[in-house]
Image (cartoon, rainbow, N blue to C red; front, side, top):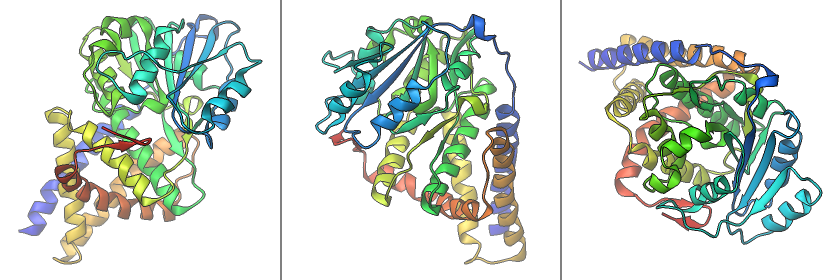
Length: 363
């Protein structure tokens, strides 16, 4: 009985993975450098004194046509040295601006309100967002902007993480895996998620959805923007795999921080529709089968578990190749253990804890 249940779950998981792979590998038309639209990069920073300088240095090195790029750092009422570091760095750099978001916009709070305030004073045709704990590649802005053909409203890019240890590497693999799923579904017209540290959207489309003023509060503000633009039903929303648009973020330093991150994403994921819940349920049942295999052992269950793990590897491998990253087998095994455990634990954490703690605030 267990083998039958497990086989059905993995069969559904296999079909989903094939669909994700087909969507993720989809290619899109690019415009040339002479046609690049003007762009505004926005970074919301709260208590990021250890990260913000590296982030701004990478933004300062961005390659983009002269006069077409501005960068706004929104200091979200930091209580450490973040403001001082920002002002010192940008004082002789005219393409940078800094603000402290004083105005309350709509129902949004925290980071989303900081971004919304920055958009209010921005000039770019394209809005790009990344996080203060991220370092962007020199071609990041140019790469994302190059996908803005006339009918494109939103373009996302891939984010990896620093991999000095296996603990950090497993988080990086998890990022790429989740973004591969997000990209695969988005490119096939059914967006399920995105990540705000490597995201861009057309100002015209942002204004059409009414901006953040018209969005209800969510701890995953990027997902709210994504779905509002998708619901316009008039633009393309795409997630190309492109090394030039890669961003590298800091991994969570410890289990507590990692739990808070996953918990925040999980709370945001409760806004998913039927397709999102179906994908999550299939992943839950498949990973449950892998976890139960040592306890309800059979040769068939062992083969099915091995197939599931190989399926994950061969889903990730071509994405890593296109991003010019190396997928370490040792780190992948650590990721699989971590992935199985958190996919099974997260639903229970969401049932018993609905509060989100982030950057010293509770939502």
